[in-house]
Image (tube, rainbow, N blue to C red; front, side):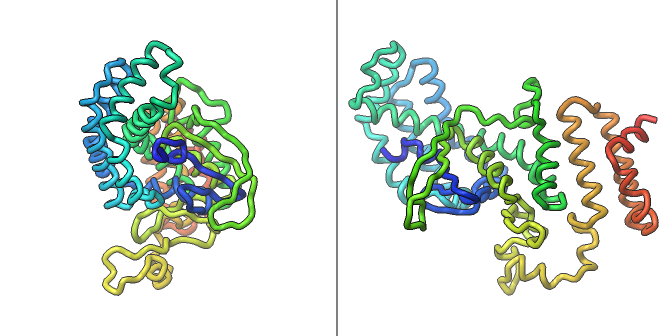
Length: 366
């Protein structure tokens, strides 16, 4: 039962590459692509997944019945069709999974799932026999699909502000490390909301010799098995950062894309929305003059401003800055940015110093 095996939540890392479902890409690609999943798609996934959540709750209460499992089959098929239509996870082999789901949601397997849960509740060794293996696999499939919408919510809540800070940084490995340190402290306070320390619990790591997709000879790879999509997507972004791969937002289409040569890549290679000539964002970007980019997010004055906004948000999330003071600091920073845009002498003079966190805090509390 391939779909119930760990490969759905498994990544292989070798050097600066990641392999998933038979495809090899620069590490960070999978997590970066997930940043683009629209909120309305996640909301629709939540509605579709309701029968799955009901089945998971029944499993937890040891009340699983076959009649709860048939709607799960339809829910998973609807989720796959939606994800395929929206091109949310382009690396998934949708044709395989759309065919395989009806094959594993048989009456026999649903009865085995019920039998497995009854025996497992009594801690009987018989629950782990090969005879009931397909029933166990069925419950795993349901659990994996049921947690997908909430995993995507957690991923975007925790990683979008971080990705924005990376986007606005000077985009060199040392700058990525500095931004990472601001968002994820070395000694986390576990009383804080989980996204502020980014736990990657309940995963297993193994090293093995295998032939990666597109290669002829075996390589020693790091294989990581996850229990949720949120852990897998986070991990991929973090692994990519270790090699200088980071998300960047295209200023033309607004989508996130991965840069591996960050300083020299501003636009994505996708087609620009609404362009009558069917040009890519990169082609349009190359046609724009500098005067149209003066207030772009990567303008030096706005980089300083945006970085300070992110730092203020981090301090608020950690509970070391109250909301009233933070709002004063934001207003001061906005005024200083507008002053710097209109006054070159100020921009080249004290602007950067006045925008330091300590300087803004002192001014806001004086």
